[in-house]
Length: 473
Image (cartoon, rainbow, N blue to C red; front, side, top):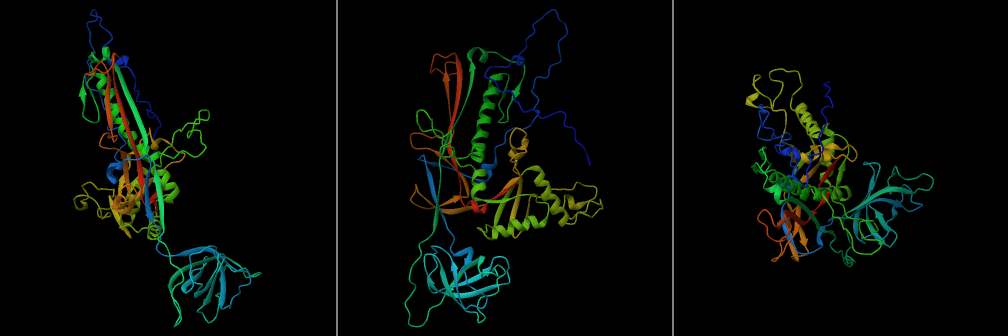
């Protein structure tokens, strides 16, 4: 196996500064020196495109909101199931009537249920509910042999700690009244709050008039010999990255935490916000380990079957996990690493042995459609790509939109599963504000001999139906 030297190390300090850098301009004007250096005017782009934003642009949308609090309702399950319940003491194999300890259930007399052993898929009973109390449910079994021999029944007292129950219909005798009670639609109210994100760049008027010898350029195409332009543009690009990473990494401030209030003044403090990773940690599906085997993909598909069963999903992965998926699909597709001319059934130019092979995959179907993409944020050494503790391998995001009840609109609305809400009204749009203060660079708002460029945004991320997402660790 190849060994890669750890030197040179990763430069983690891009050296943004509040003033122009000393080594950005010619400092030696010794005319007695007849030898001048051969100068490369243009700055070399060592790290290529350094921005890590793009994730939310690909999978989400942005829309305005008018409040400090964003609320929406998510649909609950349609059918009823209880897991991990106890049979009452004294129930024995062969009994025709059983009692199940389910406190405050929504089960009703007349409903037909299936009772299964939580540890064995082959043992089950079916019956009809004859009585319901606040503590237990009584059911008459259809089986002539009575209670099945559940493996979880304790032989000493015939109690069970692992019985699952779900409703599959109902049955009533002739000439009887209808269903006794009704059920209300179940929904879960979710909420999040926007946070204010700020940044600033400042340069004094004298340095703005200084012409450098280095031609600088930035990711957005700005170029020139004025060094402060580079610093201002990098501040803007860095701020735009933070608009996304704050939505990914944000966490709500816990009650009684130091961030929530000033212990002396008792003033309202920082609120925090629910970012994507926090939402998936608490409401999403979590997969730990590699994706190097087909069973790993199958486990994800089987879990999605039990959730929303969204047909199309996008996998945003770090480089190592992306390679794992590529290798898995390559092995399934006939590639065996032998180097034979026709060993691989995938590639460019009809797999001509003299041509290049495409050893990567952009998508596959296994129960559902999965589209794969590298997530630069997880690879960047100055961000998630440079940590080991709490490492994230990727996320699986459902494509498309879902219907939710919007509290602001007061009606059902189609919303992307993942989208950003920013504060805006007719008088104030806080999606992405920037303004210039000072008396230099065209500004004339104060007597400060400098130019200050301020940036501000107020936004929150809404993760709808987090049960359809996967967090990969």
